[in-house]
Length: 470
Image 1 (cartoon, one colour):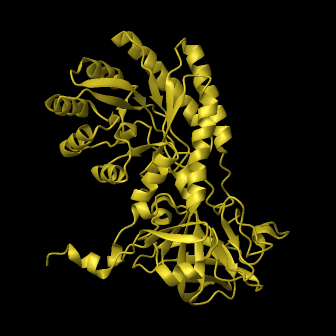
Image 2 (cartoon, rainbow, N blue to C red):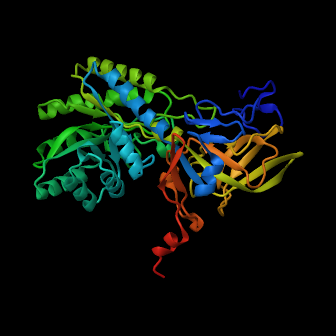
Image 3 (cartoon, rainbow, N blue to C red):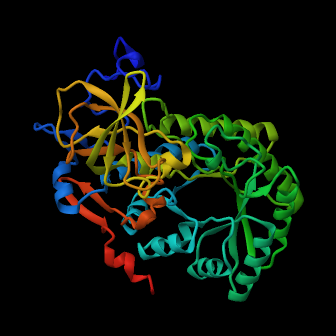
């Protein structure tokens, strides 16, 4: 539906090459929107039968709108496809990476759909427990967990604590011994893989803060140290190579290196290491540039990688673990904004750029500024037959880098008061939200079968002022 014979050269010469001129600017591009997102007979976007105008009237804007069934179905899809792929091997554990987005309702959905849950702070752990999560199915990550957080996790009965340094092994052992607990742990190891993603979300190369290096021998020392610890029980090894990854090449290299370490560890401690977690980071479609692999393709390819690597190493196949977060949460959600100021800016050479200002911005979606991320958007309260033009959708904050959508086609008659929806905002948007410029954090609602539920209420001025002691 995006094809046009003039392609990116139609209209504004500043249009990026990847952004084709739309044959229908009102069209909902498949893959960018949740399964229950449609346009009704009036041309208004609906999510699970609820129109965006009703959502604005009840909850205001900006508002994150989650298609609950879409979220749940993606969770089930990853659970079922990976279980089928790894059942002939030694099985698999699937956990939702809560750093993508977590609330009490999300933690409950994850539990009900049969996934475990990763947390990486005391706050995320508290939310998971408040939601009734089974503590034994929680995994606690973090490169600098405090003694208080480690104590909280051990006392709560967290199933696995991922130790991230030699120092943390010693601290956790002392805490578990004091509490009289034999604490299961995973070792976060650094495989030295340069994932093909943004530098800030690549997490397995050597020069960064996460994990214990395989190359230096520290990871093997960590295996020996945990095995010798009185109050710790080594469950396995954990590797995470990064985020928003579209192929399995990096996973293949990481798996071989981690499995080779597992073989060394078996020889060092005299028993097999039975669990390997290869993390998540599976990419999603933010614009038509992105072509992510399906859950089925990922599961089949990763199972083959593990099986072939173990055969080559003459190693018994361990139980695997994976941690999708973005791939579940991201596409299930869109953010609804109201258009405010519109401004044509002269660029020289007879060219203009239309800046469309919305009532949110980098306080609710900092990914464009932080990662140079690309997003799409759509005029969602109505359709238009007017010729489209390329616009830049920007926020209301005092930063020139406060951009939400760098380049997209919208109808040329977009006007103040219109509603704009930005898709695929379920991951790392609300989770990274801030009060920059003392902005109030948005509401989060879920929609299912024509009903809207408020998950997180909109922040108020009273909330903002309550913690300022003056």
